[in-house]
Image (cartoon, rainbow, N blue to C red):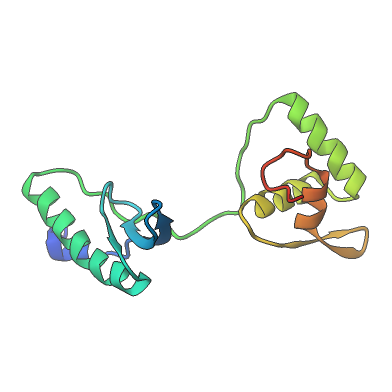
Length: 151
């Protein structure tokens, strides 16, 4: 027997909540949103307020969409393979390959470090038996005006 997908069913699902600090020029505030539910968001003066309020907003969003017979997305998987297929221009591939060789790391390590740096995450990679802070190495290899490069 198939479980009926009613308000209680959807309300118990582990939806992903995103909490961000925003500032529209009049001062910072916090926005909480449900990743999988379009336009399901709320703001609050504190992170706690926004998180508390998003639960009620989510329930109202679900109720409204159920009443109107609209499709309700379910939570996305929390599993990540660590593999991404990425198509880039051959000219960029060449530049990245040369910079990775100059840093004495693999292209994969170099690209991982560059992506981590752009995301504000610092990681370490190994180059011929020695550890190095990969974001520093990747940032040093970026052109002067590249995003993520600090002066």
